[in-house]
Image 1 (cartoon, one colour):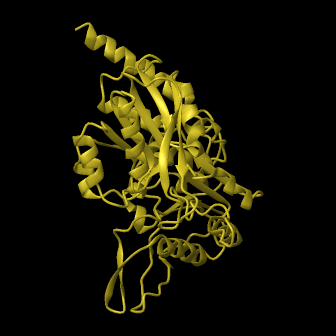
Image 2: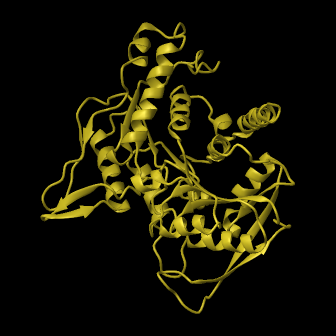
Image 3: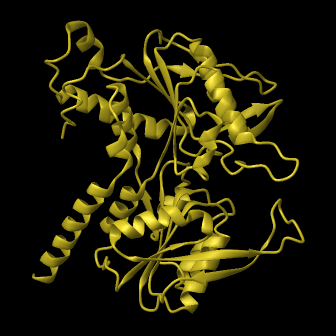
Length: 398
């Protein structure tokens, strides 16, 4: 269906769109491009002048670019067509470790630092010719180094300031580890987008017998830092919330952090209830599985491990075992970070596609319209739950 919001068919775009999805996020970039091409082909364009129409509808909005490397591992960015006057959207996945390059004859995997450097190279190659530059960086680079403890670098804040100094106008990220990092660039656009709707949609699509009410479902935050996102989801679903706090051993540092001694639960009874554990990322998965194990001790029913970013830095074996042991029921993440073929084959894994949502955001921003409604999915979740309950009722009456 064409996306024909009233605001989009009455307002002109600020400039022709140019999409630059780096290789790390090429698949999502292609889907975003396909949505935009389809919507704009079917949209009423009577309010546009002939000059605007000529660039508004085209076969693809993707700008051809490349980032070749020298034998030493150094690189340069090349833009293969004009970007003068375009509304540019650069997309990058800094966590995609599947890409490699040759470094003095050795194959080297691309790190977040490599991806971030390529992003800067693309911006530098644009050379100030674009009308506007928006960077879409789903996993915010260095987002876990958002505050200083003793003599440490503030990498995330520095990266944001560096992008702005290079001419970036807006930065869009998803579920920032700490949204307060935007204080580093208070006079520029910074949006952190929550995928709550996509999570509920994905779970409802794959699990048809979920009873979404206060008697049968509960949302849990695995630590105090993630309470806000859990409170929001619980409020929309109309269920209770619980929280764990991590008791750490501050007398020692292991792998750069104070080790967790225990997870202490705060909240009402979870006995017999399905539980959604919600966090911004699943990294090694140890904390998520520890929390799920504690919830099972409290006699929870099915447990859904939900995280915006599925990094799985220590592999999938622990999750396989947790599912086999009945600790976890489903693992739910978005496709905003690299997903291994092995992960996608797991029966317990639910992938939530974010490409349509990103296309919505780009389409709206290009028309210089507010994205407030897109950032608050309350109404969409309500409509989804009504449809889901109606489907359950129809199945029950068969």
